[in-house]
Amino acid sequence: MSDGESSQTGGVPDFFYELIARIIPGVVVVAISIYWSKGDFKTVYSSVGLSVFVLVAAWIIGVTFDVGVFAGYKLCPEKYRQKITPDLSTYAWILRKLLPFDRKLVTKALALIVFFRIMTVICVFAVLICVAMLLFPRWDFFLPALHDHFWRYGLVSVILALVFGICWNEQHRELDSWFRSEAEFLSKDINPV
Image (cartoon, rainbow, N blue to C red; front, side, top):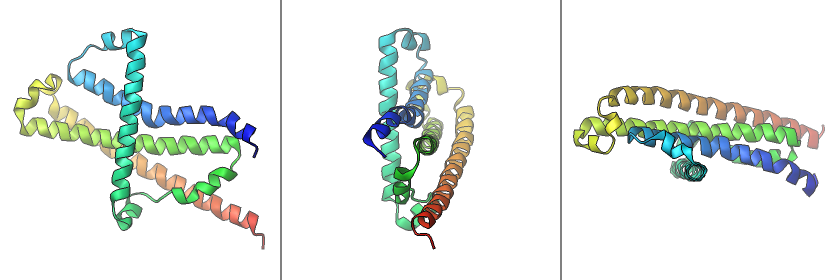
């Protein structure tokens, strides 16, 4: 593949990867923070300058969650890591051999894995905040919107954490199985018997 071809197809998938994997979870965190602190959504999203600031902040929050979760994953012992999710980095050579259209689809699937992983962690953090509100009632001052509803938010967060966790695991295993079959196909193509 020539350099011109890879540069033509690289920009859009990279942007959508960032959008799906990092910006959307960051916007969720910003929206939850605004709501829980009884902030005003109209004020935040009314001007272009604030909206751009919110998007940049959302991207930074998404990257921070992504790096934090990935670092936590890499710090786990190897036997636990493989039980959680298989390692897809061993299949990086396959991505270089894919056609641009197929590469876009795989990039989208990888972005969805990161999205589900970050959303699972966000929901777990929301559950921890609700548990802290239960154990330390004086914290109502910091998050007034949770004062009367932390049980409901906690329950919804637990359900969403389970749903996002299951989606993360299934998406990861599906992509791992696809990579395995593609590796088997490409190894037969390279070494015909």
